[in-house]
Structure formats: structure tokens, C-alpha cells
Length: 253
Image (cartoon, rainbow, N blue to C red):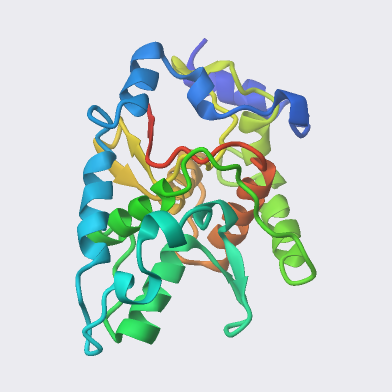
């Protein structure tokens, strides 16, 4: 069956949410070789960014000449569990922010430094370093009065058909996970490994990069980096993956 034929077949099926008992990390659908690459920090290419982030953690930047460590101390103490809770609501700004945005807000508000661009090596490094402190801990975003509207908005984005191919996220990742599309196994699409080293990219990348890739694949206009739509979708995906362990930096095909 060709990719085009498979996409047509996906369009014809209405999706349903994955039952909690069937929820599993995309790691479980990878080959043994890729799993082994992720499991061994000496072989996991994403660890190069973690090492870069560790260096940046103690680097003094901006007009305040402060480092992340000056405020937060040892990351293995203060950052443990942080990535599992993001995105989270920022009362001072009245909006949801993800981990990359939080790092940049710390830079601009406290270090008085310029924000790092999306997919910048430094931002990916700091994000991977912070996220790696939560490895093995369950995803656990907070759903309350401030975040519930964002959860609903993210769910809407996940379930609505988009693009010229007229597909929703759920049609692939809820109803057809474990099947093949173009020779590749369709994963459940959980974000617990981000930032990830994707073999297709030969580089580390953020969750927003992956979301934009998916939108392009269905021939939809991707939402801009840092947009409320992307952050809402991130929040829904983290809630959908609730309980799955953080794997960052994960390896994916």
C-alpha cells in the first residue's frame, strides 16, 4: 500500500482516545538498536546537547552577569521534576508557557540577556539539560482553573482535521498507532522524550519543531514557534501522556 493510499484510509476512520491501560511511550515501538542507543548515555547523541547545557548552566550572561546556577543552584537538585510539569501557567503573564519559553523568560527578566532563538543550539542544550534531570519521573502537568481552557484548546487542535490532506493528529496517533505508514511505525505521539535526537534530522529538536513537521506533512500551515496554539497542543499532549516517564533526551527514528 502506498503512502497516499494509506492516508486516504486514515481519513475514513473516526478516532478514539487511547485507553490508559494501552498508553505507552513511543520508545516501546522502536527497534532494539534504537532503544539501545537511547539507553546508553555514551551512545545517545542527545547527550552532546546535555553536556552543552551543563556548561551553559554555570555561564554568566547578560548585563546582570548571572548564571542559571547563581539563582537555581545545582540542577540535579532544583530542576528534578521540573520538565514533567511543563507547560505551566504563568500568573504574571496570564498565559501558558513551555520549558523553552521559561528558560528565555529567565534570560530576559533576570539575566537581562537576549532570548535564544527556537532550535538554537544553546536553547536546546539548556532545555535538554533541565529535562534530563527529570528522567524516570512521570509526566504530571497541573490541570486547574487556569489551565483547563488550554487543555480544551489543545484537545481541539489534536482532534480537528487540518491541511489539504484533511487529517487530524488523533486519526494517526490514537486510532492507527502501531500500524505502518510509508514503512514507518506510527507511534502514539507522546512528548515525554523531548527534546529528542531524531535520526531523520541528525540533530536534536524541540517538540514544537516536531509539531510543525507534522502540520507540514498534512499540508497545513504550521503555527509559528512559541504560538499559543503550539503551547496549548504541548499541554494537551503532556496531559495525554500523564504517568509516562520522562526520557529526555530521547532518540527517535
